[in-house]
Length: 259
Image 1 (cartoon, rainbow, N blue to C red):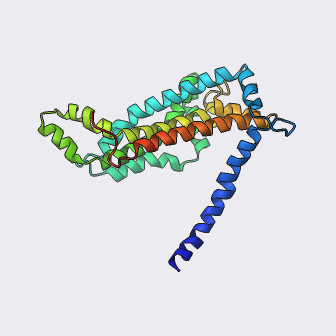
Image 2: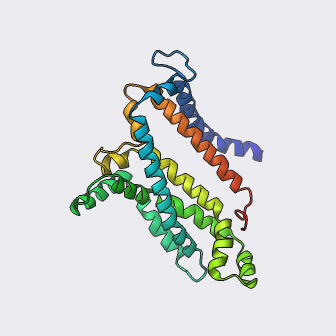
Image 3: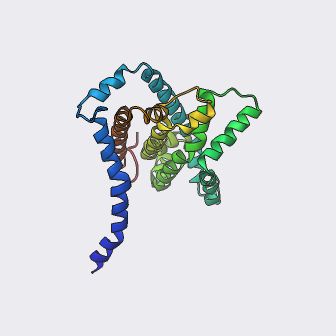
């Protein structure tokens, strides 16, 4: 009886996943292996992508923006996450709330407001402003997984390192950082993939001067849905590989190994 009730509760969620997650992915995969005439092609769309002159520049911009955003978010987010886990800091919930509050504001409104600030300060719009906007948008996605991972680290490891003569700084680099690697990898994945596939940020904060993979997919939607699907499928494969790597590091619930 209990199992039947659980299955009934899970049915709406299963239907939602089937209609709005699984079905779109299947359709993307189908379109990726079809040409404009609807005929099956194994690598035709991917060959066409390789011949696109604009694609290398788009990939270059995407890699620069994605890696820069991930590194900056890591450099800013890790110290914040580490500080929030300290016992003497008794307002952790308030600080986490302050980082999450911007997420409650409409995404486009935040980007338009950010553009207005840059315009008022006479800051030229380009790659720098785009990276700023991406960091502003995705910084919480870096902080939260790192914070959760560090919080789970058994403090006995750190105390043991200090008892063996390690300074607090050495204990941090030799114990805390390695054990927090699952959170770092998870945060990097959660930042870099959305960064290279976004299109609203680049459109607003560069005045359309820059194009990332998300912008390129969006531009293809009206005249070549098959090429857009091929790019999307490639990105999904990349995301799946990233998730596999993340899960591998997450096997140990306490984090990674100690150097």
